[in-house]
Length: 112
Length: 112
Image: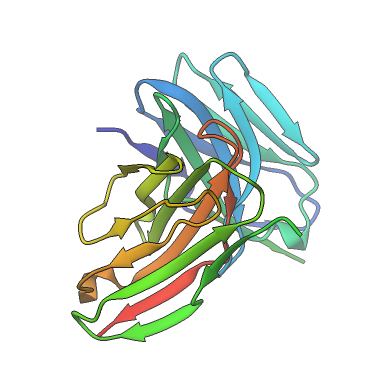
């Protein structure tokens, strides 16, 4: 069964600190891996998309890594801001990528 | 403004009363998809469409129907809603299944 597991479930950090979120998946065949940011009550917004051949991709203060051999990905947030408070969702596309498997997300809270 | 719109945003209905949630995008995207989001379960794909008149089941299609008669619209139909379909629903679109998906604002449905 295709699965995407994220850790930690929740995280609280101080503004200005860095953090790393983890994603492990068992989706096969693999097409691509996406990270989304979802503010409470709103639709997810895409941060990065990586294919099998890419092992890192950045979007501003967000940097995603992918190890397709171990089926692991991470999202690193640098110099966190209060506006980074949200849920971060790891999503894996299988085969033609038309079917997506979502993780349950990591809820990040950035505090003063 | 490029966007995905959903209507209604909020709906309270009763068991068995047919309803339709509309989804429209103005980006000329070929790929569209419906998801539901439930606490602790994350987002799950209901149906997707690769292009006009082409639709396919996602992970949780039972109790739902869709149609794609024109590129911009992808309505979600609940013929006989039941309380277990109470959820937050998101529509999304993309140029194709491999690329970034743009999500709508969500429709919160309650079935009594």
